[in-house]
Image (cartoon, rainbow, N blue to C red; front, side):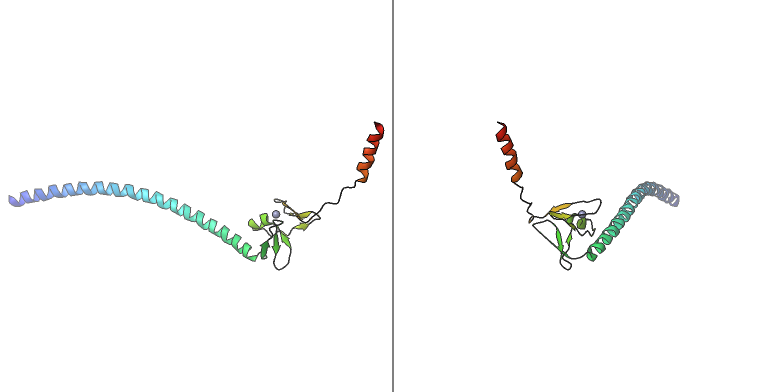
Length: 144
Ligand SMILES: [Zn+2]
């Protein structure tokens, strides 16, 4: 009889433990689903990060192969330290090598999406002829 009572006690304890285990299992399943969703998001972030890394690596490689330049404070252009050409700083930031076209009054970038113009600070516009102004003032003077 005592063995039977012990058996029943043990059975009740086992049933109680089994119930707790089921609750714990349900909780763990929920936690697992949550961790799986988090893991999926991290995989997406990792893939995005790897793609961004690849783009930056390619840009860096291009940047490394660009001619070395120094910034010219007066004009805002870059001057090649080896070739002495002027380069567009707006384009270099976008890792585009763009030698500037030299004009009388400045330097023109001819990259279609840029078209930046840099003034030549040493450019002096030709003096305006005073001959025509004198002529006009004479006509006005004679009229009155
Ligand atoms: Zn440019």
